[in-house]
Every structure is written in C-alpha cells, then in structure tokens.
Length: 334
Image 1 (cartoon, helix red, strand yellow):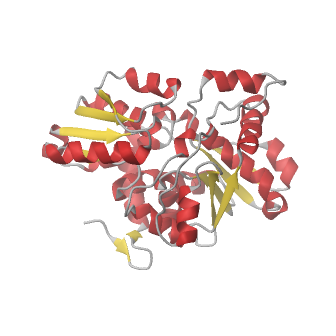
Image 2 (cartoon, rainbow, N blue to C red):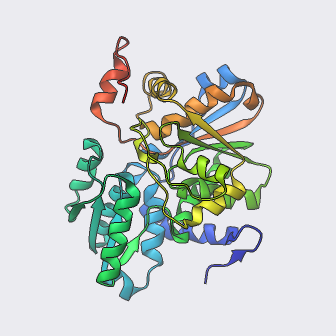
Image 3 (tube, helix red, strand yellow):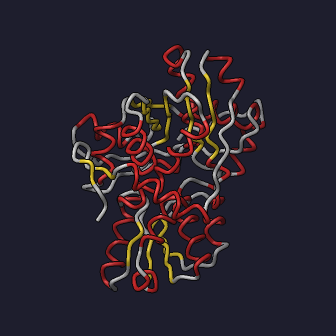
C-alpha cells in the first residue's frame, strides 16, 4: 500500500526516493544548465531541465519504468497495454523491449510522423483507434479489461505520477535556489508528480503549469471545479493536447497544488520553439517550448528567482524544424 499524505491524498516523499532508486538503472539523470540568454532577459536564474535528452526522448520513461517495475512477476509476465500520442508510447515500447515483455500499444489516428517512427522502431503491435487521446485510452482500457491485461496509463496512475515526480528530486540536487518550476500540462501526470514531491519538501516553491490556448483542458477543468469535455484544436504542443480521462486523479492534485496556469497561443509557442532551437541549441517539441513562452509572458514576476523550465521532450516534426530555420516562414493556421 502506497503511504498517503492526508491533506493532499498523495504519496509521501520517501515513496519518490524509493522510485528514483528503482528506475535509476533504466533512465538518465538529465542535465539542468543555466540559460544565460533567458536569465539576462528576465533578471532571474533560468535553468533548462533537459528531459528531451532522456532515454526514449522524454520524461515519460520515468513513470512507465516505475509502474512496470512495481508490478509483481506474475503481473509483468502477462500482457501489458498502453495508449499514447507518442512519448508515453515510445517509453512504454522501450521498457517492453528492454525487459522482453508482452506489450500492445493503442495510438490515436493522426499522431505526428516523428513520434510514430519513434514507436515503430521497437516492433511492438500498434492499434490505431480514436481521434482524441481520451477515446484511445478508453478503447485500450476496454481491451485490457476484456482479456485481463494490465493497462499502463499515461498519467492516471499513482505509480506513473510518482515516477514523473523523480524529476523534482533531481531539481533540488541541481539547483542551489529553486523558487519556481514551470511545467507543461496535458493529462497532468508530470506536473502532478513534480508538485506532489516538491510541495511536501519545500512548500514555498511555486508550481506553474502551461497549456496551449487550443487545448487548455486542465486549466479549464480546474476553473470549472470538475473535469470538462471540450474540443481541442490543432496545436504545436501536440503532446499536451486532448481531453482528460473522467475521474483522473491528476485533477485533484492540479487543483490543490498548481499555483498558476499560463495559457499560450500558437505564435507564442512558435516563437519559443525558435528561441530553443536557434539560440539555446535545444531540440525540443512544442510542449517543451511552452515553458519558455511562459517565461516571456510572466516577465518581471520571475525577477530575482531561481526558475526551472521542464523541457519535457524532443520529438518534433521535421517540417516544423524547417519553418523554425526559415526566417520568412509563417505559422500555418488551423
């Protein structure tokens, strides 16, 4: 049984440290360099937590590794099923391949080609289903239940959340003074894990979440007081787009522990992508770039503070990279 902190209904810090030890042989402790350009522009100390350099290309492998390694031998020997728009799928496929397990991955129709290729290389069975991540996850859960398989959720699972939260442990080791962490939000597993850990060990740390204006589902849900169903538009931050599963445990954590939400339009995300790629030499995807866009939007609020930006993943469509490098290119409108 996972120990629970009554106030927020989340695991205590020791659980995160145990997870960090469990997954350490299978992940990378990612670098967290100071961005001199962003620091000089804001008067803050801005650090880039480079999860784009993580094993499998994103932070997602932390949660997947923790979940699968937490299963007993009998559970791990059966079929494991996951659903993903890309990064969770790549992490799932990587662990399935590493441990030679029986896995099956459901993917939505229309995921980006770069993420599709990242999954295909592992050779696990892929099933295309649904136009939205919630539809795909629902189909995968039904399939898992029908044949008594185990569903590996991208975010709605406490072991997944704890695994993502191990980033918080590394941040405290890497940054002498940490005042603010800015994090992209999709289903909320990443921000829930980091917030759940940091708010217990250093409650004064401010947790700021970023979402695209074309799919601000968690921010809208928190404002409404319940998980909302809404149509998402195409966005450069494709990894964070789509709905949230009904009764997702991440909703309550985000409601209680995220201090602020920043909503970014597509021009702001594209400009931040350009900054990362051309000025920081960081190959990152749209979700990662939202944290940089948020820095520019928050302005003087960050002055004098130690700020970590979670650069969550690095899988980006080559066509977007081409546009980033073309000073005359304009962002296509949906």
